Amino acid sequence: MNDAEKYCNGNALQLPDWDYLQECFTLDPDVPSGLRWRNRPVSHFKNSCICTSWNARYSGKMAGTLCSTKGYMQIGIDGSRYLTHRVVFALAHMKLPPASLSIDHVDGNPLNNNPNNLRLATNAENYRNRTHLNKQNSSGVTGVSFDNARKKWRAGIRFQGKWTYLGYFSTFEEAALVRRDAELRYYGDFAPPFDESVLLPPAF
Image (cartoon, rainbow, N blue to C red; front, side):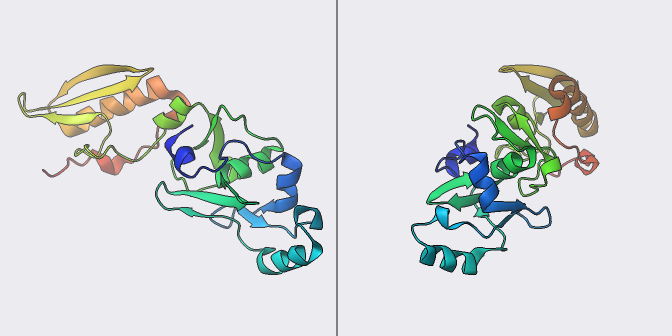
């Protein structure tokens, strides 16, 4: 379970069954969450009065709200909270995602819940594709830092629990490009998106 799933929990990984989800939602990639509420059947409620009232208020509207601490959308179903991207994935693929796997946002944007942007991933793969930097990072590129003693830039990468140093470099751009090459070699399809603007040296 990744950090977002721990925080925006409830039963984040154990979704209701697929048939129930289909009765609740319709996919809509044009809204931030990727979901709209359906007109839900009376069997979802204690009585027809509650059903009529709920549908009048929510049917056709976007389903889901922002989990502000982690930046993911979450959704409430019958008193439990779930990660919206897991629901979108389930509906798009007509099956529930395994509880043992995460859902990775291919482009690194947690608010892009388009089904084409979602894929199954191990926790390690999901972590590799993250785009946010560690709070202690001042270079702007993960795995790249300045060695004051040597007056050079150094690069490294972590893979399967092991940290590998990639070398020392005279320029920030060299270090960043070597780090990027290592991401492609080690992480493959789960290498994070790369923005060439990061090649501009940071100001200290």
